[in-house]
Amino acid sequence: MRHVPGLGDLLDRQSGLVTRAQLRDLGMPPGALRWALGKQWRAVLPSVISTAGGNLTPAQRLVAALLHAGEGASLAGATAAAWHGVTAAAGDPRVHVLVSGTRHPRDCGFVVVRRVSRPDGAPWVRGVLTVCSRPRAVVDAARAVPAADQARAIVLEAVERRLVTPESLRHELETGPRRGSAQVRQAVGEAEAGAWSVPEADLLCLLARSRRLSPVRANPVLTAADGTRLPTPDVWIDDVALAVQVHSRRWHAGALDWDRTVMSDGVFAEYGVVVVGVTPTAIRTAPDSVLARIERAYRAASARPRPPILAGPAGRGSVA
Image (cartoon, rainbow, N blue to C red; front, side, top):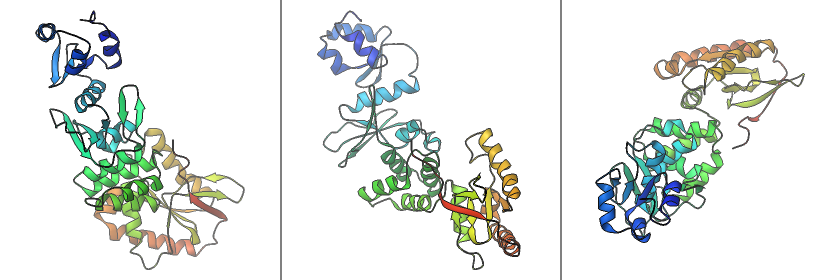
């Protein structure tokens, strides 16, 4: 059917997908369309046709969803957050799209349509794909999940991977609707406090209960007296130069990241820093025991001369 003028170029741009309206605009006769649908072509959504056999690829599903939603639609929520690289938002097989409140496409098949009165002001456009901006995608994805821990995982991973800043999330949160935003507000607040993961956020909440510890900081930049940049600890208690590290393979980006985290304990020891290692499981299941260990380490660290370690602001680096 590529002999229909303009159809070949359109299919190349749209990953082999086309809408019925586009075919009409190109002048394809209804009888020819019925014939093609009886052969290799198939309707994957009421208004969207695939011109190739087999199941849609993940990339084709995104294109098909946008074609179904129509002009001005954007990939949104969990779909957009996962597209931007937030793995905690992946796993939803549906494709979420956002459209202006004046338009009325409906949910259909694998497509979930959300009508809004506040469109994204800075969507990403990549070929035929229009994707909500990172802050909008992260906040919407975190708002939509049923559990607070899921929302925290999405927000904190996005910040840890430097996809967004806490400031950009706060702006998006405050310009959006307040209804249903409680769990997102909690997660953004934890990101603003310096947490990079759910276990770190849980640890900060636990340490805040202590009446014996001095104020703690999350992920500061540490520099030794000789100018050496030390590893960034998950939690730092500055008055005694004590580091608390959350050790978990799940919350590290890969094997090399995990190896660097474990090796950092040895580097701290070389410069006189006291290190306490804890696990996410212990924080959740035995918080009193974890807190008691850290308080004992704090007392021990206060009994020795403090090493000359300078702690600067949180070491996130720039957002890509």
